[in-house]
Length: 249
Image 1 (cartoon, rainbow, N blue to C red):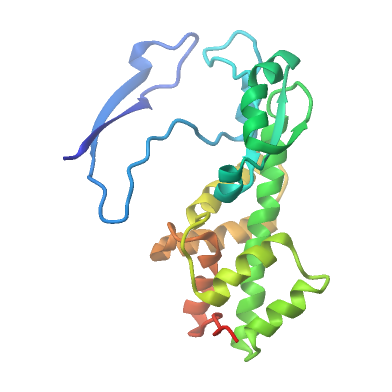
Image 2: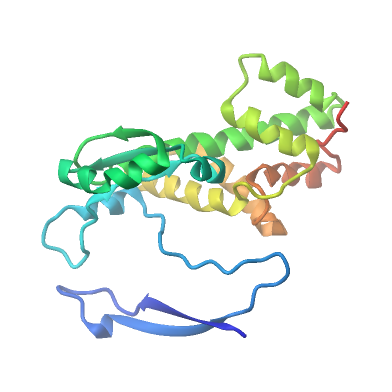
């Protein structure tokens, strides 16, 4: 039986205090999950860092958040309670969140009291993460297309200056042709868009992030959005008619 879902959409930009007429409620039905699918209720969202700056406790029609604490680590570290938090907020806000932070994190970086700093640092992290995944895919694609043993290339780069955490973590997925999602292509479509929005807000060109964003967007457009983010390599494989994967020796 389909699950009812309700969305609150902005009908008109508020002038002064928001009025009920500024919003509209839209009802929709969410189809029943298919085999192997689950229905997820979203209770958190990603927000542009410049929007986080509006969390200051000043007169506004947007209620302030007490703690700006984006996290990094993915599903595996979330399950083990070893996330990294990049947090900013008042001492009182940190004290109120202490039990949650200590139960779920290995490291908490306290970056000051101003709202938005935590999200900004997270955005910088995601710029690097997305670009590193994209360049790892491009490097392995070049190796495969040129005829190199991709597993040997992985071993060499892992011991060389070109290595990165993302290279070491994501390339094995490409070599095994296993894109069971531990992260997802669509996550970097979203996160790199936040990166680019931040650059736009500050009038700073971010060409590397833009190129990586286009690559993830191409992968999502090809139908691979729900696969692990390492599946971005499929864009190159499809374009060049080759495979990066290699049998285990």
